[in-house]
Image (cartoon, rainbow, N blue to C red; front, side, top):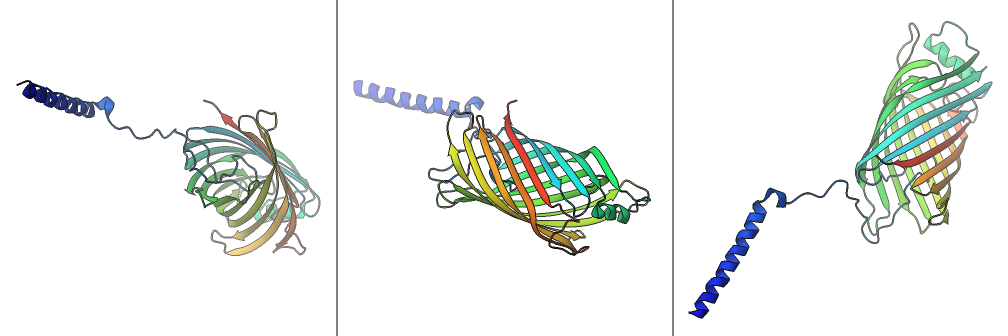
Amino acid sequence: MACHRRAAMTVVLLLSGGASEALAEGDPSRKFRPPDRCTKVEPPPGAPQVPVGYIFGFADPTDPGDPCTWELTVETTLRTGKGDGRYTALNASIEIAHTFTHNFAIAVSAYGAYTRWSEVTAARAVLADAGHPHAVDRVHRNAFDGASVEFFFRLVERQPGRPFALTLSVEPRWSSIDNITGFHADGYGSEMKVLADAVLSARWYGAINVGYALGTQRFIMPGAPWGRASATLLAAGLATQVYSAEKQFIESVFIGTEVRHRALFQGLVLNELLGHSLFAGPSLSVGFPGERMLSIAWAPQVLGRSRIGPGRFDLGNYERRELRMKFATPLDF
């Protein structure tokens, strides 16, 4: 009898335990919850990593950032030289980016433009083609230049034995200033880029950007027609880390070089080549505590050709020199 009682008690305990588990499974508070999208996804052990930040000059990296983080980026690009006369243009932007998941991010930007030129044939020609009623010899303007929204989709992540990553970006943009003359013009376009970067060795990193843009623009003046154009971009950057420290005012320093080829076409599908240019120059990136980074890149035009003029440069569609400064810092909300 004692054995039967012990066996019965064992059955009851097993049944009660199973019932408790069944009740727990039926409890809404105990149901399976999917992983939080804000959880940081660590790379697989042994996977090579490109340092976070803008280390390649003009070329963009592939990393969209940690999930549920925000970033503020301030960028200015100085463009000088148009063949004849004096030409200076300064384009500035403020960007706020948010990473939704470790493979998807979105960025919103606002732009400003400062343009000052005098006796520049290329700028005069653009205004004449648009139907400006008077000959313009000089311009000095500072204005708001529209906004854009950019989407980042990381398609390929780095893995052990695969040192490269691939990201697709799409950026619709509205502009209110002509990029060459500084005159008011309504512009609508979009740029698509494929971004790739890779770990080449312990302190060497490389990046390639391939881009295609298309858009339409009309000057704000009576009778001005809508113009349609498209453009291509091919950029290759190389950077090496020359300094690294922890808990210092400067935590990292990268130096590098970059080559960019840009081409402009009439029509939305690369219908007719208007000009192309090759830019090359050095870059410097400095990392500060808190994942803040300052990037400086200088790129003169070393080769080019324009349909509207002879010479070894395209100074009608592009400038002789470009200098870009970019500062990025995380935001805490």
